Image 1 (cartoon, rainbow, N blue to C red):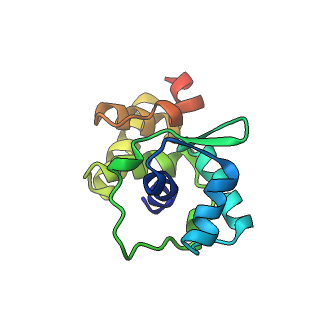
Image 2 (spheres, rainbow, N blue to C red):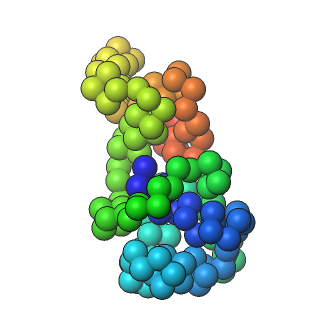
Length: 146
């Protein structure tokens, strides 16, 4: 959730869905003082890999409703948001963000994996879909396996 909040902040601040990459970097590094410019560029890479941003020419476009993200005044992301997460972790986080207990989700995903003889990523994508979670931009190979 921290990554989603960090990505949403510049778009919410300006009330837009698309920003020049340089403006996004300035918003996170100079305006908010959350990251160095290099770290802000890394955040773009991570967020793009997780399907939260699209890169269009020299711009970045948010792929979710940034205005709908809860961004408390005291929020400050830590550097862990700059680390790439596995597809399974990303899918699990989306499920947990909807209110499902993590332990319950993991148990059900493991059950699906064993029952259907599919990869953990495919099981997580299937479970997430069954829970009504949008996984279109994350499913990738897991979705093709289904």
